[in-house]
Length: 196
Length: 120
Image 1 (tube, each protein chain N blue to C red):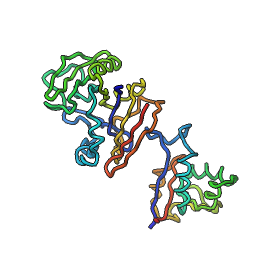
Image 2: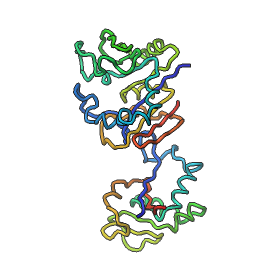
Image 3: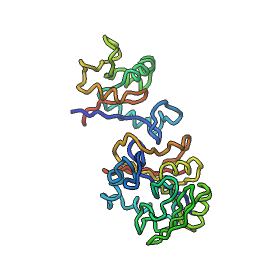
């Protein structure tokens, strides 16, 4: 039975991104290399957790995880993810303004969904078939899916530093209760898995 | 050299106060924190935490009370002074433990427990 999963790297104080996002700085004031050091600088010791992120059959992300643009789309720009994004699967971008889908190299197709989180999840489930749907982020989109009770497995990767500000996970998910499944500490990150 | 260990319970979004039903004083976690505490040489507390504990433990009995009551308490406070009993030592300029009062203040809260623990 395919599930709805989510992975998110957060700081010790719960921030998934920084303030002042711009096209040049997708994570704003938060240093993405520091946040994701576990993923890129310590590949072998986190191989299992890394691999689990990319097994889903479809992904859902918020507009601010695709591009920092406000208002009308800049249709000449195809987002932050480069010509061959790491998803290799249909990826549904939640937004308010429609835009034609974009087919990237490697199997990633960005679809732009304007009718809300439930519609996006339905389309992602159809696209994923027998595979899981993963909520890719950012924090406010994940909060919405958590609050709606859709996330069946939440995998947090806690980077061992305090950001002190930014966009915090769980701000919009008060009252959500999860069952702890596992935890694994490494010198560079602590992996926490919860189920609904 | 001893180690200063900070130990607290928190929700997954990092809230430690006010405490609610999510706090687990019993079971595996209770045993774990008891073992950790019983191996320590004292407790470092903020003034509010101290007042909360001092208003409760001296009249209690049982394994926690038997451990907590005689243990030295190092309390960060600018207002407390004199002999407070209950093995309390007020930290400050004349601090019994050599540690920055700023650090005590920074961690001060109703439920944070800082424990001064000798290295094994």
